[in-house]
Length: 226
Image 1 (spheres, rainbow, N blue to C red):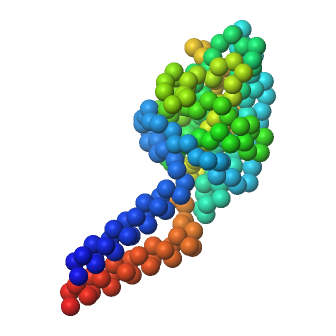
Image 2 (cartoon, one colour; image 1 turned 135 degrees about the vertical axis):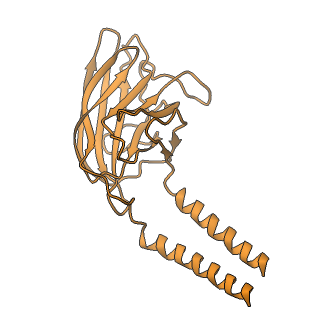
């Protein structure tokens, strides 16, 4: 009977792990990182609530930035903030960092990235090497020379689509920065208001699966006592 209970426990644990992995994202706590940023097959999607794009020009590089706020597909408050930069082929410098602000410490910030195109964002060619979050609300993505195809955003390259997932329900105007030694700023978006006291509510199907697992555990425990 102990073996049955153990087997059910393992099954429920595996179920929980599978549910947690349905949206791969690196969790960034205030002051956290640098951590590797999970790569997903495509953007989670949802309704685009606001978007902005434009050109950036400096003495050493020029390019295009794209940013958006997306109401993610999960239940509950979950605004996603999207960023991407394309470095023009005529630039003479590579780009090493992209940041978004201001994500104050009260908000959850999980990060992910994808090379797939999405609603005005192009297919990316350069993945972020790591992500971090400082105590002042800046979430950053670093592009540093490394292995597995990572590196800086060279002339002619576009970054992957960078996504900051939050538990925010509202947003306001914010800023993003592109850094290659000096920072160049562009208009973007940031969460506003107060985050909920609890995270997003699981989907009904998720709750049903968890309930089934818990019932199985309870039944196994009762048989063991008998």
